[in-house]
Each structure stands twice: as structure tokens, then as C-alpha cells.
Length: 394
Image 1 (tube, rainbow, N blue to C red):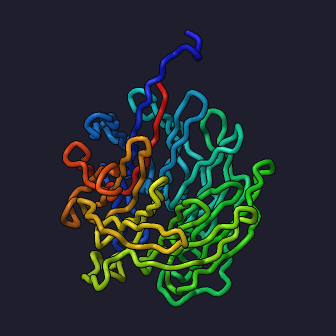
Image 2: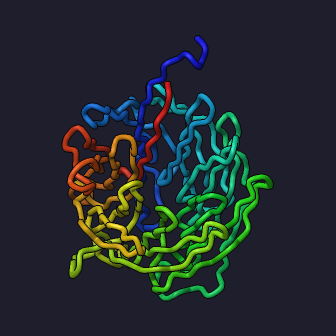
Image 3: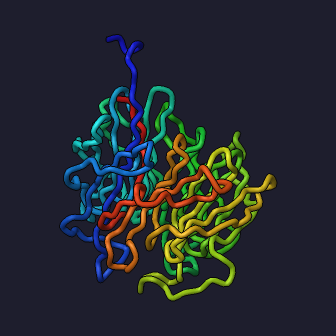
């Protein structure tokens, strides 16, 4: 049957990364444990807003796949996962079956830096690119994705300078890029160690990066981790001091101008740190912008909540709610826009040694404040570190 006459079924899958155990002598490193360091796939049921496991067993993904990205390329779908192996860090590639959700390993590409902690896939015209942030080596990389889904060797890398290091905070002893985000022709890189957002102009033809700005945050010790964009503004979630920084974005130059900071935690809240290696009761982590609702949502690891911000016309933020995430130490938050759903990963259920979970939250009611969907949208899985959504045509 001609492709133009075929009817397609839209299917949404949630791909989750199962992390390893932290090394006792270095909690910033991870070790291989049976049943961890793998990927699992869930299918989203539109009617019940529930999740059904599609993989019969976790698919090995190297060491601590804490970063995932997905892409639909031609008539195929792919999942990209970070492999934080100390001796040979890499990006692993998996083909995703568009009907069943089955994962097939398709190889790995060694990275140009250590500790690949975040991945971002971007389409420019007919070409696809993957960008990677390397926490350990203080660098970012640009890779072209081949038509068969494989990752080419880095076409360009950028090493963040150690000038002005170390800073006052303990984790700001060296540059630590923690995320990569493309907006138009610009790459934005929050660097936790440098306390700055790096802005690069992307030359998609030559596959090169050119530094435009190193925008230092006004509050020392903020520790920018990830970014979200809404309209002409960027929002940085800052891990070390649990804040969101708002920036105006010059769409022509890509440059950032800081507007305001807002706390992700309720005023006056305090508690003991959940881990020995945490130096605060909570550390902010993931961030997402909800298009059409002027909302920014952040995960708080420690307070174990979704911080829900209303965005005012002048860029000011109002913390409207802190919604429990139905687990402990929530890392990532992703969205299924067509279903008004949020997907949140909790590293643990309740106690800090429990298995983790994936929880779905409905955005359709209560003025857009996330509401836990209940049992259908709640699945338990060991060591859940991250999850991302992909919608396919089959």
C-alpha cells in the first residue's frame, strides 16, 4: 500500500535508565551491579494513562545510563544512552521497535570526554545531531547522527577553561558541564562548576561550535544544572542552592541577560541531608517548561517534590505549589504534551534503599497543577535514574 494511503498508529513509549550503585570511596562514580545499568521500556496506555512494561528483561547499557535521548529518523526510531565507563566512556545506540517497544543494541561510539552526563538530539534540516555534556572532563561535544541512527565521532569539542577555579563551593573546584540544550542555532551549556551558562553558535554546515558568551550567574554557588525555554526566556535550575534563574534570550545573538532568581523550596523548610555526600537537605535537578500554560516545573531531590512556578509577563516567578513526587530523590521530569502528562523518575520508593519508581502526573485539571494519576501511572523498578518519552508512527 502506498505510504500516503496507510493509516498510522501513534504510540508513546517511556524509556527508563536504571543506574548502578555509587562507589563507596567516590560517590561521584558508579559501579556495575547485577540488574542495574540497563534500559527498560514502558508503553503508555492512552485510555487508562497507565504504563505497561514491554521489555521482557532489562537491556544492558554499560555503566549508569543517567542520560537518554530519542530520535525518529526516517521510518526508524532510536534511543541514545550515556555509558559512564571510567576507561572507555561512550554513547550507546539502540533501535526501538515502533510497535512493540523492543530495544536492539546497535553499537557504541566512544566519547571525546569523561562522564557523559547529558545528551540532546536536534534536527537541522534533513540532518540530525547529538550533543553531549561531559561532567568529568569539563567539555561538550557535537556529533552528527548517520542515516542508520549510528553516532559519528565528534565533529567538534569545546573544553571549558579552568580560569578562576576553584570557586567557593566544594563541587565548583573544576568546570562541570551538566547539560546541553539547543535553541535555534545556539547551544546552551549550564556548567555547575563554573557557575555559568556557556552559549555557543552552532555551524551545522561545518559541524563546529563557536563560543558566544560565558554568562556567570549573579549568585555565587548556584550550580546551574539544566535549562528550559519558554517564549523568549531561558530558565536555569540550579542544583547547589535550589533556585531557578530567569534569563532574557536575545534570539539574534543567543546571549543571555539575567532577570531574577527564585527558590524551589517552601520558605523555612529544613531537614537533614538524605545522604552523607549531600551537603544540603535538597538539591534541585530536572526542569521542564509547560508550553501554553506559562508554567515551569522543577524536581527537588531531598524535599522530594515538584516545584510548580507560575511565570509572570515580566519574567518573575511565583512558586504556586510543591507537589509530592510519590517517591524519594526525584531526578528527571519529561512530558507527553499531547496527553497532558508528566513522567517523573524517583530513585527510591520510600526508604533510601527501596527500589525506585516512575510516576505519572496529569496536567489537565486543577489549573494545571500536576496531579498524581494513581496506580495505572505508577510502576516500580530498581534504581530508576532517568526517563524520556518518544512517540512513534507504526
